[in-house]
Length: 515
Image (cartoon, rainbow, N blue to C red; front, side, top):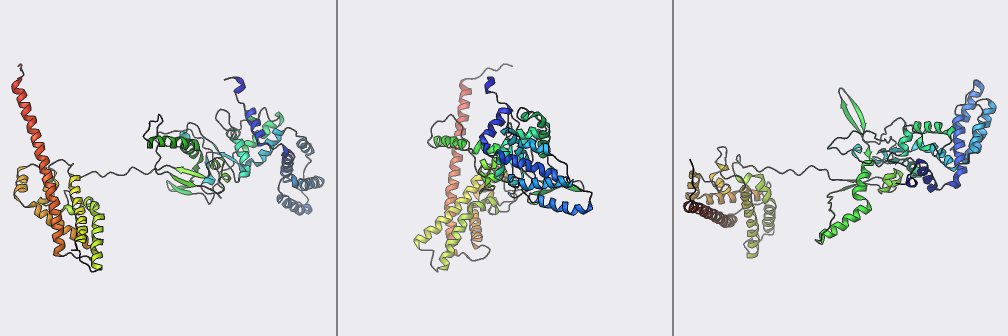
């Protein structure tokens, strides 16, 4: 890089002040500087004459009510002359004349900025992001400790510092403190008492004093505010009161990386390619369930520099824990499978719809035996019956034979239904010789009637209802069992074919064995 392209503090600061373009306000700035200097000196006034003490205090009270600007300068000068005349203060005419003679625009601007620096804070954590009226301190996090697994300001490869202030009129001072050369902002260096950024701008006789003043004003005593979100944190037998501040630098880093206008446009472009099923060399990033927190959206620039650039919006990624996936366990301790939560969750909506339909018929005093109405009822019962089949298929992924566990309390017909591939001899005999399907159908009818009755007992089933429940479930159960048997027979045939083929290979091509 050529030396002509290397930025120095002198060029960065002077370029910024030129960009602010306040040359026409130099006299006003000098008036405010002089008014402030006189005010500070007047506030040191004292008298040993008891007769003058009351008058002095009255004049000081009058002084405190004046704004320190060019408009009130004549009044402040008059008080200065009176105080000198009364011997309450010493003369500082030389200082006054030096200020009047100030001609360097950059020095005047920086000196004037120094007067307003009390209200501006270069920061990483901004108090007003918690509440727009908070008067608490904003802070600059200078901790460099980084721990894997934690997203913190110190973990950012490049910290984007913010400038906090009470209103937008001070934004130019905040931006002045955020000027940077090779990383660290001007405010951070001045906060540490580093005079090098001002060295070739401020006169040598003022440099030390101005640097000391910057350091003092940029290191105020921290203060909390009743509008801050405070947390009681236990410490042994006592507690600390912690103030939670929003990390503006971290918020800005997330915004710039994922939500800046150009970034959003690029992501939308990639998404359109994805929707059209066209190739894109870029990776599409999906950001589901992003929440937006509004912070002084009406006037976001009144909080901080970065909050203004974000339009008062703070984006929050979804940090909910992963959805818990229940581990499938056999229903060993249930006395009936119809008490299983999973089954009842499957069938809940369909049972509710069937119940509402039946109660509607009863309320209207119309028969459900009408062909169209009966068809609707049967369709809902079919859906519920299929829910029961779905539940059995869910358990089909469990190892065959789980129902042989001595702890299993399910009736034998339900063991057969849910653990159909179990192969022990006694179990197979019961499966072949007993009317386990009939018992299962009765269990289904009992469960469905109980579910339809509900806590309010509004629905009472009739024999006709029971016949429909029985016939529908029996048909669906029969089809399901036939399918299971067919699948098992096909698996057995395939296994026999493999065994026969393996036996034939060994017969035709016997392997030599060496002992």
